Image (cartoon, rainbow, N blue to C red; front, side, top):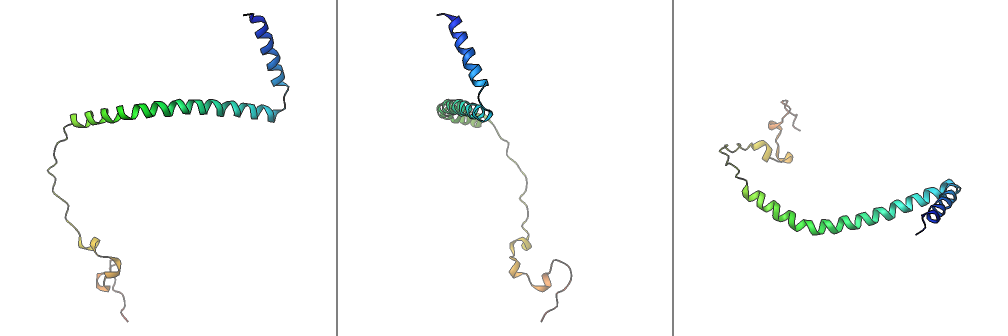
Length: 103
């Protein structure tokens, strides 16, 4: 191959690109970015599809090898006020501390 011809063609191509208006340069740039991004995304999705089953197997072996100690903490007592809906609160049970006038 004659590298001088290739170098000359690439120089003329770059000069043509440099002489284009700014908006056409931006369109060419974003077209190249989208094409490269789509190609990289395609290969990323393919490798992710192939690696997900391996990830599940690895996670299963890690989880089975971990010995989590049992906890002897007592359970928390339940509070009746949290189990009462706001419509069931009587005026005597007003949480603000002041009695509400009854009609």
